[in-house]
Length: 272
Ligand SMILES: NC(=O)C1=CN([C@@H]2O[C@H](COP(=O)(O)OP(=O)(O)OC[C@H]3O[C@@H](n4cnc5c(N)ncnc54)[C@H](O)[C@@H]3O)[C@@H](O)[C@H]2O)C=CC1
Ligand SMILES: O=C(O)[C@@H]1CCC=N1
Image 1 (spheres, helix red, strand yellow):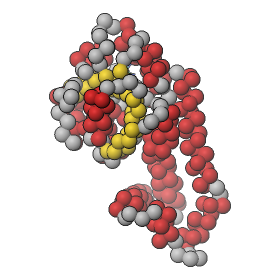
Image 2 (cartoon, helix red, strand yellow):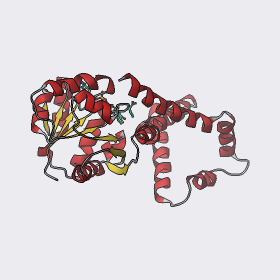
Image 3 (cartoon, protein in one colour):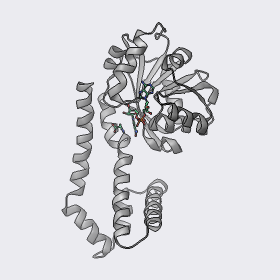
């Protein structure tokens, strides 16, 4: 199981993060192939990760046992068509799709046969081994599931999902959510600059505070709400800021934004 070779088709932000996590955790580099249609990106991957890179997806497809489909959802059908049209036997390969908004049934349709497919919803902190990956399998073998779990455990924590629709839910909770945190950090950074802190200070202040807050959540086994309360003196400065967030509807906004995220994934399932 462990010596299977793995090809990442369309190595961009997400696959780069996954491969980096795998390598940092000792996955054999010789077992990894990365493709990209962009020669500059391919050269960058080769230089940074010292793994085999390949401009021709079909060569990577033919060579590898496990194929990670990691192009943008909008170009997945065209990519899969080239696989379906090739004379390469897909039947013994395991496909892992990290794409949002494309179901296993639809991927099998795109590939022209009922190949073994596991869906994964990772996130970009995988780059640092701090990722979260939601996994969903329909008919995959225990061996395929164990291999997939082992791959993504190299990049952080893994959770198996019971229903395929849970992939759309976990996109809102972990796949897209790094961007919510970044947006909040950007907003604090912007205001810090408006208050007169220079660019370097503003960046350092926000990053250290975000890091400290996240590490407090991780290291102290108490509810997140208690951590918030511990910062909030009665009738003090934090209370004034939080009261404004509450009045302006931030909590409901976050919930609504996550619903938008899930609905977009559902729409994509119909569009693609
Ligand atoms: N970026 C993220 O935070 C997450 C992304 N995903 C999923 O990962 C997938 C990839 O997303 P990103 O990495 O953000 O996109 P990206 O655009 O950074 O990477 C995709 C890469 O595929 C290459 N490509 C496009 N067509 C190709 C082809 N036919 N052959 C070879 N290479 C090709 C592009 O040059 C690009 O570098 C998407 O399906 C997305 O839904 C899932 C979870 C999180
Ligand atoms: O924005 C997207 O569609 C992808 C899926 C989760 C994160 N990025």
